[in-house]
Length: 324
Image 1 (cartoon, helix red, strand yellow):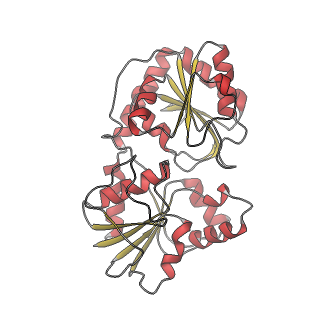
Image 2 (cartoon, rainbow, N blue to C red):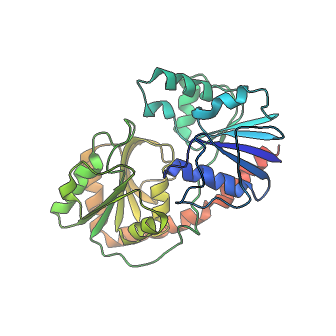
Image 3 (cartoon, rainbow, N blue to C red):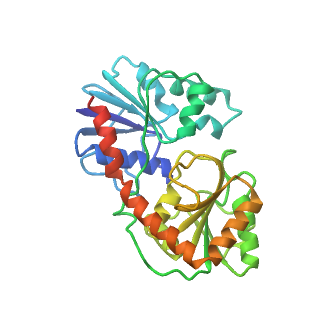
């Protein structure tokens, strides 16, 4: 089958990584044509399989279209649209730009499209059904981790380093209240070394940081995950964030502050999890840092989980549905 797969751009971002993983893995079964809406050349931070063809916007000869974000929902209306169309929803993206009416309308069109939709979040599925009236089929799946890019490691921790992902909030659904940096500030007072990384330059509490890495490449991310004793990730909402899963490969346990999302993370099973609030996040972080036995128990659960729910596990489900 010839599959036309859209991607918004090649920016260094977890959602883009996931789409490229889809393209690479679907190319084992199909001829995959990847269309970058911005027409960019191959990215330098992730490998696109040689079998995947970077293509123009022509869908002539295609058997299947997979639309991966509201940016490209208009492809479903074109006269050259293939007979099979699927949607892939990674997040309730209207929350990224809540005051942008044009964007909201694009998201609404994407959410309510009659075509089958792959979804990676239970609360996203509820939201688009209850708040937007979606009646089309929804197929629940998850994301894996590329274990070639992020190999399993049992390297010892220094029990001093705390890694904070998303130090700067990039939209209102993320860490808009700066809980991650504020918790890190208090942990520094307790003697811990604070390392942050993100996709925008650091502006918040820079004096708290021993190191800040902007747009880290894959080797650097492996180093950060391996060195970290715990990972702190705070946000109002997420569908299924990449960093906690990648950190699992190194036995780095996440302290997660979140109100909705991240179905992979279960409190006291493979993480410590609380609502998006400062005090319980700080309390859980200190508790985990001070309890070696519990941290080692959760670390091993993390390694088991990320290998069990692999890309092969999820993409076999995607392939089966595509072929129905």
